[in-house]
Image 1 (tube, rainbow, N blue to C red):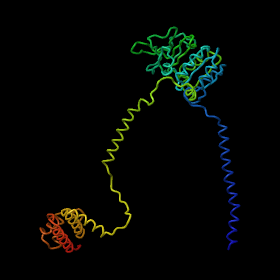
Image 2 (cartoon, helix red, strand yellow):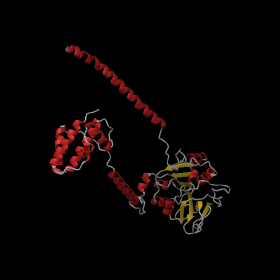
Image 3 (cartoon, one colour):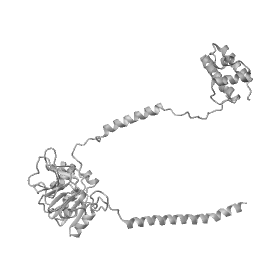
Length: 399
């Protein structure tokens, strides 16, 4: 018996080992295949807005490739300190997306790149213009831009832009001395200041030649081929043999903390808390008024029906509520009488009285007194009523 039991186990052990090795081998092959596929695919291209390596609709890889084909060297950096170090004579510094460019980093770029040929803010947003304090501000463009209307070297008379995001306006009523606005926008603000899609500022001791661009979408892969966008941005960024493209990241933002006093909580925190509190109160009121249906639960112990009946009777007796007890007895008797007589549930009281009187031979007034009479005055009258109802039920036989 023991040898017979041990033999199959001894035979199954090698088979189990072979299966285990096979499963582990396949799992290893799958892992290696995934690693090879990841290595072959390489690092995915970034999809940040205005990223020079971005191949998505918001990236600018197409523009960078064209610049390189024209012999322009394009270096991409992610730290403002590296951008300052790489910017010198014969260099155009381009700042793409300014969302992660703090006011500290913006002022560092302005003061540290005076030797560069040009500094181009490809996304001259309101935040960065407020930080630089150039006497210019940006606001959302509500109208389309007109003809160039300027003599900038990178603008031709017939050029047009169709994707204006920011309207650059002077804060003092007129552009800074020596500045020139390109592509004016129709209308103007309440003070009569005309806005522009781009503004050229000459070099000074505090900053290099500066170009503020309010149409960043024109440089993206999606819109660079639209209208005269390609020629404009290529001439703007290709004026030097070397382009340093800064696309700041989170670490640059941490290395250059903002000096502006910003509130700890967002502006919507207060209204949001009020709305959430009102919603919570409304929910509490709605749920509090709707108790829902009763849910039966199993009793922890089994209780005999007679004990429940006796306990309920004791409660009625202790409360001395003869009227309630009589009503319960009469209701139960009426329900049983209707069932014995084959009447529908919820039958009319008059119909039930007539049927009971006919079945028992009792006068209808006497039946009505038993089923719908006045409440008993004391416990003895309640006992008498219970006996009379029981006697009435015994007289009734199911037809």
